[in-house]
Length: 91
Image (cartoon, rainbow, N blue to C red; front, side, top):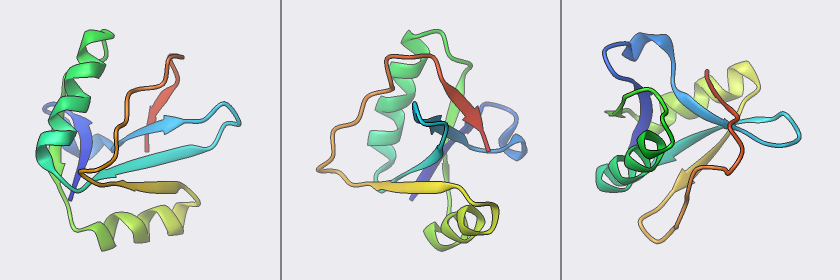
């Protein structure tokens, strides 16, 4: 599984989408290729350079539960694009 992190700053946290309701959602990608494609879409919108960082899903889910964040697991069958509003965060 993969999450998105700032390039050269993996310890800074993970990219999370903020919903219009203000909830933060960590995206956990099953496939590295899907994570890399999403990064390409973000970079086309002038987001900072990012990495697809391999993680254990259980650790990411436990961190979300501990800090009250939502998460979604994105499978190879899902089609996701960055939101059309510039709302993101690093959790």
